[in-house]
Amino acid sequence: MPNLFDPIKLGAITAPNRILMAPLTRGRADKDAVPTDIMVEYYTQRASAGLIISEATGMSREGLGWPYAPGLWTDEQVAGWKPVTDSVHAAGGRIVVQLWHMGRQVHSSVIGGQPVSSSATATAGQAHTYEGKQDFESARPLETDEIPRLLADYELAARNAKAAGFDGVQVHGANGYLIDQFLRDNANFRDDRYGGSIENRIRLMREVTERVASVIGADRTSIRLSPNGDSQGVDDSNPIPLFTAAAKALSEIGIGFLELREPGPNGTFGRTDVPKISPQIREAFTGPLVLNSDYRTVDEAQAAIDSGVADAIAFGRTFIANPDLPERLRTGAPLNQDEMATWYSRGPKGYIDYPALETADA
Image 1 (cartoon, rainbow, N blue to C red):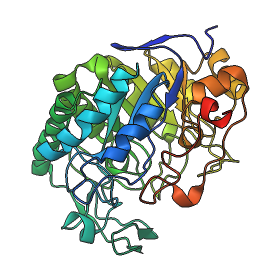
Image 2 (cartoon, helix red, strand yellow):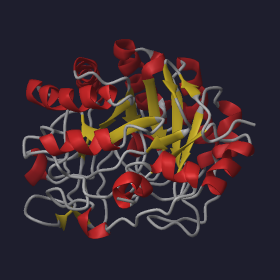
Image 3 (cartoon, rainbow, N blue to C red):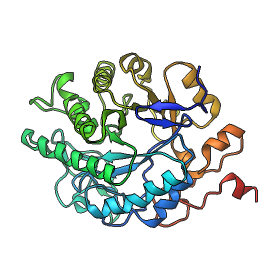
Image 4 (spheres, helix red, strand yellow):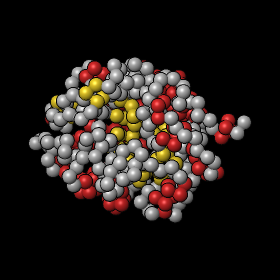
């Protein structure tokens, strides 16, 4: 069986190891969603990852409701990302951008209009806004004749990703955001060609993925799904046939890899008793499969690879505190502990000040 530190082909991208950096929202862009200088250092510090998947990045103003998260729908945002990708490449790394449409998980005070979703629903709880937390609002359903406009927004963002120098694009189809809201039956009550049957509910995911692939190439396109259990109020009554059908459709498109976020019953950031569906998805998807959620040790990650289900592992919070995570895992060095209070704060603290091994030992 392959080793966690062996190289792997992820479509057109050759990764030197199977330790991927998961997408991690950090909130260090400016108010116009333009990446800032501090983000160049942050990503460059982590260039030893087999592949960096960027923080979730808005593909339109409508889709981006997280304060100080970056976007990719303007020329200024492209220009802000270019130094990031240039610096990561100069350090020997590879980086793809995760394109994000949050659907109903936004607030009108951030996006400047009513949230949109598959159906007229609302999320329980509160949204992050520039004025602090505010109650989620009811979304309006996207009209069928609006879908071409949505696909055009994804196409523009993919073209901008290419112009910004990214090695590929990951479509965010997980975590209760827009595509997930179309996929799962407790959020999708449509009676048009995007609702009802499994074939209809996976249609938007397939069309978005195909549109992105038409710009950047299928072998440089990936997607993230979260198939097991509730995610921000989005769930499905029969997830195995739904997500195996989604995986089969993605396999037919020929995407570079599929990433799954699968929390367990003892998850530290989201938990569920719904069994993981990755074994069934592995049967339906023929490309590289990347697993994510609460992997912290070499033994845990290697066991997933040895099982034949995973081809690589995406590490999240451990990459926040350990910019040189692959080397720490390879040598058995102790891991820095991340500070939750600085996950989404502004400035360098808890962002670019975690020591690498040579700094820690100096």
